[in-house]
Image (cartoon, rainbow, N blue to C red; front, side):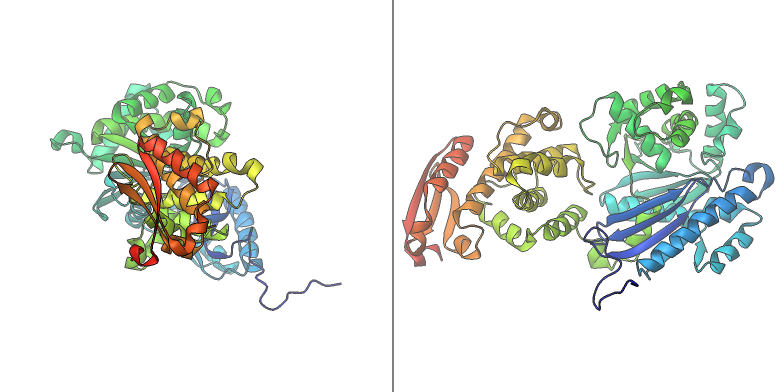
Length: 510
């Protein structure tokens, strides 16, 4: 019997999410398909597949794309085109970067892509740099410094500040070309790379008396370097995105990897053989960048060119949105936790447990949404899974301390006050205590009236005359039960305050 499609049935649904956009990124090392769903301000990756074709491997020697590499790439691209057709995704953007851009037979390859139904755009080096920078700005709205996007065929450098870009350039220093500078030892290679960076117009350390902000590292090889660094320091998080290290630590990391053999790196968990081969040379490049650009710190970004393509198409008001809240809201909504209800509860708990010295109201709202989402999980697995959401899901616009505070608030909402060591390793006791208070206040709001809107309208929680006070309208006095008294006692104890419940006339809450 043939398969049939019912009207209104979305053939493209993946794991409960409808794919909205797809990007095919044809690079010098890999050809990659990424399918996105959810909110495009903080998109969810529904499919991420790559073919390691190494299109640019012979360009330095022959100036052409190798026949075998093109055949391998085309095989993967035909699969991608068929997948997208079956998923009924029509919003597809195909871009090709340094290898296709620089190769003498690049135009022929582009024609072959058109013959299989793709509409590729070969982007210039400057456009590639700007797109990568826009991806970084999308992930780090307050970004200030220099973006360094390392691909197989080129290194893009561009300055970012205040949501704007400047001084975009592309240098022939991709991972496939770095071995050309390895004519002597490590010191000679660093001198050769330094010369190429200066020739490209980047001589900031010599001419700029002030520090140059942050060096944002974009690209798979840099991410592999971050994974190495995280393992070396037993870092409790798993996602390299957003990992921040100071300039001295970055230089130490680069020196360690530059002096390592790729075979010893290959055995490292979560570092592919291809990345392991590139890491020693990339580490020497990082040494040269640190010396020449003199950044204050280094941040690794998983957002780059592809996310820049998404960010560029957003309307201005969406770009201005908070990526953390956009991502968490979409996640919570899919799990039966209304962001609208979470916002009401965050407002209700504000007077008793606001964000003070260590957190922010955006972080507290994100914690509220995640904590309410966690209540949809089976109780016996709820807290471990929700803590993993906080620590390991790729949230955008949050650091390790913020993740730990999310986890602490979620735990307290579930009355688990003994925080795991991996959470305590990421933030101070004072920051975690602030987040615990958020969670305990949310516990009161959630349990008082089963998350009903009316229960929040007929009650108030605040601090008066040195006491935690719950005011409850006479019409709903019966809502006060033993669980609420226990919850009040818990929060008051963390605040170091007495507590009481005042039953007041309904008009008294207006």
